[in-house]
Length: 236
Length: 280
Image 1 (cartoon, rainbow over the protein chains, first blue to last red):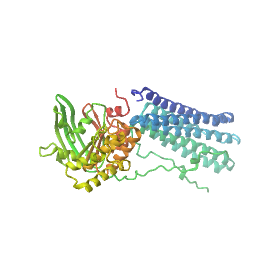
Image 2: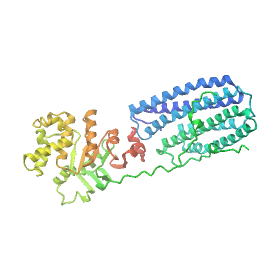
Image 3: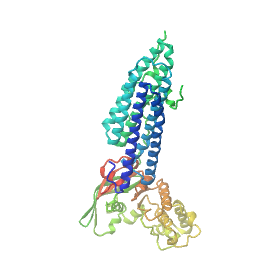
Image 4: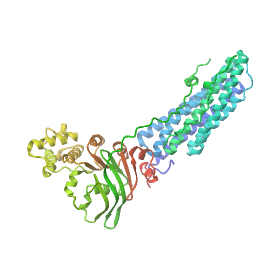
């Protein structure tokens, strides 16, 4: 869709915008994966590196935004071109946010490593894998204008929310059993919350892909089953 | 606890479940010009094919399309300018306020007073600024006496945003003005005879960006009182000044609709290709 302009350099700019977003998304995916891995392996050194590497994603965001602004100023894009430019401009900060969440997970990892490990946890790596694949799929959908794929990501977020809720309940029981685990469990809860937010952002990007392709916003309500925010436990 | 820089972490996410606030659609304006199945031939050349469009009152409607697509030809049907071309034949129906303008009982001179026109190149009469405005009202018997005429000249120049610049030199020839001023003089001349519809055929293509901006500002003001149809080659201009846009291609009216939709989400691929600069 970014071909055939009479002005060839405009084609090149549109492809560059799309390529840079894919690149930025690729970096964010890797950051998610590394942050979960360093959490599992209690690797403080790797976590520190992840925090440093976030700067690369931030730099790409600035580059993408400058490119999009230049395109608006110089090409006055319309119709699909306008939508691609606006979608690019709006997706970049979302990816930057994903990078921030991965960085936060790394920070929590460093804190967690100062306490003894708590019970083996399977849900967090599973959530991490799922969030990562949602980010990957939504960026594939972006670069190939694949509406079905974008919509699948949009719908899959409910599953991630469910995992988050069940982990939330699980962690509450640990904390009640052994108050000494509260510090670690709270850190883990925030890690899970970060992953759950990455899923939300993937759905936001899916909505922008929909806008880019169809020219309309997804108006129906997204399946949202995140109940942790209203969960209460009986402490007796 | 490490420093957090994600404030949303603690927040309860609230997804908006409410239906988007029922936006009150503004009442659609009445149709001023109603064209049905208009076909135009220049001898054997079928220049316009089954054009059907409703032009809303007190709105700016822009016609866009590549050169030779028929947009100017269609514009000229609305005040029967094509009558002056011998080989031109117009079929179909065009109504203004539900009256057929091609009906035999219609006085073409009166019609053209009702439907004014502004051309690509400013074409003031070789007369004074004052007489450029006063000429039309005089021949149509719209003014009696000097005071009357003075008032109308002043009012027309004011509405065209030219009064302050020319009030001290009304006796100078219209052609002594700058291009942008000449074009505003032509607009003042068009509105002096109290038309209902103003047709503009690329009114800014010979003007610099500042003069263009002033004309666009003027168009926006004038639509309070007039129905405006503008042919333009500048997509951005159509996007800026008009509420309705019609895209012509090879004599066909390909797509028409709200300007904002045409420029963000056109339906027809030809419209899409043209406005995004992909025409082969």
